[in-house]
Length: 279
Ligand SMILES: N[C@@H](CCC[C@H](N)C(=O)O)C(=O)O
Image (tube, rainbow, N blue to C red; front, side, top):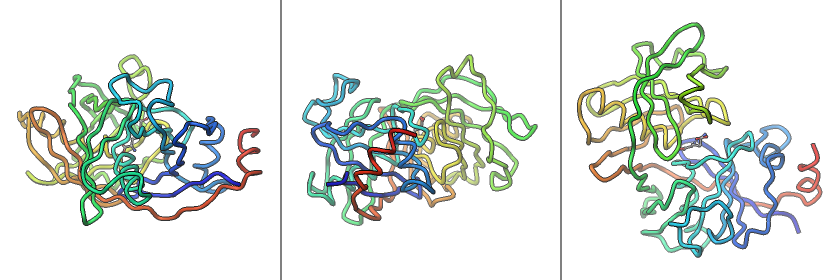
């Protein structure tokens, strides 16, 4: 019997979903890298293990041990605190698999509890928690320097608004950043504010590379965009290469609304799973 999986995406930020309610799977860094590899594996930006919080050693104590926990890994095998698009796909998976009813449900993450609503049209709203603007910094890319704002959304972001069209940037190699300020790495967003309702963004994700969307990144971008015009609350539509999401920043937190799609379900070959840990 192979290892069950599903494949899903949220605005083309794609994930392998691994159902493992009792925490029995040994999801090693090597296996994550192999699953996410687009040639020798299934191909994905990350892995979402679906497990009861009580079975996860580093789940925060605020998460009910019986709650579903999103054990998120980046494509390079590293663990990250939060993944906004991942929570939408995770919630859609729970509903489509009969593990939770459509409507309100709660997802545990390393950044804390994320209340979520799966809507009738398949879109998902996630309460993303508070955002924290941590001050100025800068990124470098292709010989250019981009002033930016550090924003924490449970995971670290550096948001760089620029007049250069983001579509023209070369994100084939990682942007440089201040390693003193971001000792554990950072997700870097490049942003063109378009009008008072819309911004366009591209992202280079820590542990992955350029992705077609980053949910926590879109929230960081809206927090930084509002900060730049002296506002603490507001909403924006964020255009990403993989589609569009809607973000609201309120006095008490933030929400992210966007699509979530389950593409396929299947089984990883047993021999492949065993050998994937040996490379
Ligand atoms: N794609 C995600 C963010 C995933 C984690 C990130 N790469 C990190 O290391 O912090 C999202 O949708 O938020």
